[in-house]
Length: 226
Figure 1: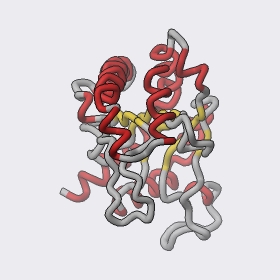
Figure 2: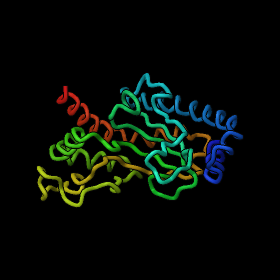
Figure 3: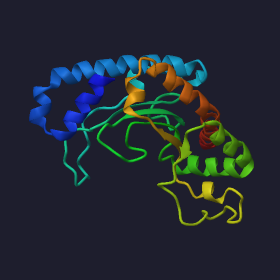
Figure 4: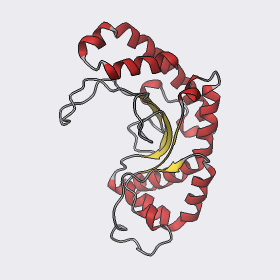
């Protein structure tokens, strides 16, 4: 991953079209290296979560160009790269496993990190997940504990328990969440290790019970919509 890290570090410092055009061949090489890793990551995750079997790299990766239409930041390119491996792909609405490289960011989430779960779920899915928390909060808490080194992300949450759910619930803090995912920062040393794939798969394997519970709720929500 050294080439990937180095490219995005320099892109961070030179985020304009002229620089990118001059280094387009390098980007093509870096994108290919990341795609090859993503393909192996999909295959490895499928060994413990068969629901992702058969996904293609393009089902799990994103364009480097930013959508600047509604953003005050007009930088044309993302300074990170990631792969989101979820049943039926990145746009399915299902919970999955996210591998993220962003060498010039110090945020817990938007840095070099691994995460697993749901980000920005649809309202019907959000309600289904909250109902799952009410019914099986202890199971969810146990799944989070099993994912050692990962922590629940609470950046996007309500101030109060949402209407229709008990404010005195043992799992009130979870009910306030608007996203449901756990994350773990990884170091550059982790990314440069020869056994990066194996280490990443070992980390994600611990998150599989958490992802499975969320996808149970997602599936129920989708069935209710049919």
